[in-house]
Image 1: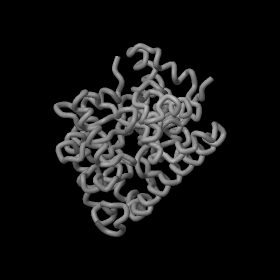
Image 2: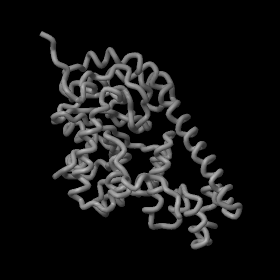
Image 3: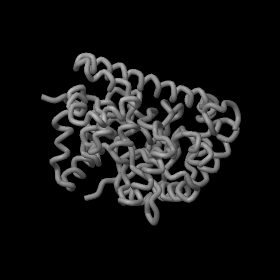
Amino acid sequence: MRDEFLSEEDLDLRNLTEAELIAVWNLWLEQAQATNDLDAALYSHGVFDIDPAPHPSSRLGGQEPRKSN
Amino acid sequence: MNNPYLDLTDELNRGRLRALLSSGQAVVVHRLAIMSKDGDWILREDAEAVGHVLEALAGKGAQYRFGAPLDLRWLAGGWSAHLEFRREELRFRTDFVTRPPRIDAARLARMWADAEATGNQVVGVEPLAALKLTNRDKDYAVIGELARLMTDPRAQLLYSRSSRDLIELAEKYPEVLAEVVEQRPLLGQMADGREALDEALDRERRTFMRVNEERLGQYLTAAAAWREMWPEVQREIEGLPLPEAHAVVTSRAEGVLPFEPTSGGAS
């Protein structure tokens, strides 16, 4: 028995071919866009925590906001 | 098929090694987990590198997010610069530092030398583990697996998050343990058994998290005036091409965001 840190699904990345890894990675990035509205003001890296004025294109799933007629 | 972060890393390094892919996307390259949709790079701290990155991102229509200007004066103080762009329906965040946390100057120089020697544009497992000693719980799971990828028992002893692995390493490499015990106090508790070691690992993790929180707290305090000014700066740069936006962000940050977080006040 050994201590487990990550799921088998995570660690299974090791068994993928390079092309499979890229495909899984790209698909994950695409699906992760669903949370763009939720993390528009947040940071994953660096020394800042909250954007006081996130750009509108950070939200809306990465789409430019539509101008109303 | 290509990956956008690997492609961008190639672009940032066209003609010269300037940027090392770090953090979450580096964890993917090491095939441990896919946990982050944002990109993070360690940049060389020189004007050519910064200029090339700005040019590459300008070509993608990138815009500044709240953060430090991508300018050596702030980067040398450990600040991070944050930009983002869109490609089709995807939002890409690009975060840059030249002085990554918990990596001292000698280690940083070794990282660049190793990258030059191997042509590898991705942060290696050992410095990546140091970078992951953050205030986020999930990063410690990644460190636990990164340690298992390390080939040097010294590094494994310094980064392992598993009491079982540590006990096994200590039995196998007692002379290495003796060498590194001063660098990691919990290694001195190896004889106390797994329960004690697990408690020590928990304490150590909480200490790392607090230390990182305090480090970030210094930056957040130093950035208070800049944060207040940012909505106005954001309006000013709205729609501007990146080179012009960069000039505005840089000139507005001067005197408001100190170059060093501990220097306070104007820079």
